[in-house]
Image (tube, rainbow, N blue to C red; front, side, top):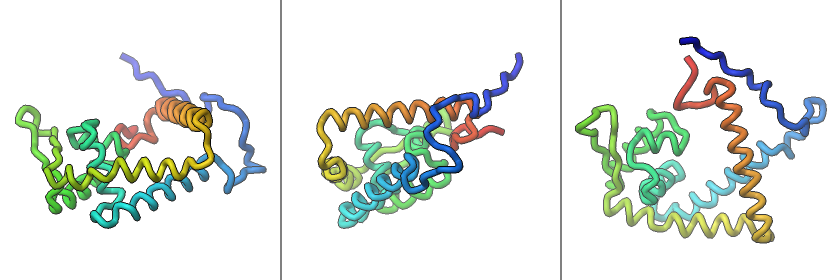
Length: 178
């Protein structure tokens, strides 16, 4: 069996929108997305401060509440966090009585996660706060513009995955290249 060497990232050709000699640092897609995301998280954190939740805490609770994840590995992948950082967050959530961890009896490497009744109550506010904040950030957008924005972001996320795969996963915290 031969190991196929991944394509260099430069092999994925995109348009030539950005040029080094004219790079608009304050108007680049990456800068603007990061700025919006930081503002979004800051606003949501402010609103969830009363229940005592930070982004690092409400995000895992929200995903568990939705049933999108139920193991440490799934949560780590979904949040794009390494297991060590996530373990520290789960330590705090468990100390607050918001979630439980239990090792699988079939596979000791698997850690199952579950919300407690307190965790369900604490995470109940998250969907409402997220909706209110996102809707406020989308003020002035038409329904069609919102759908177009979602389409653009999905395409960029897909392209990012192609770049990650072409680089052999070197930008993937869950499957780093050795």
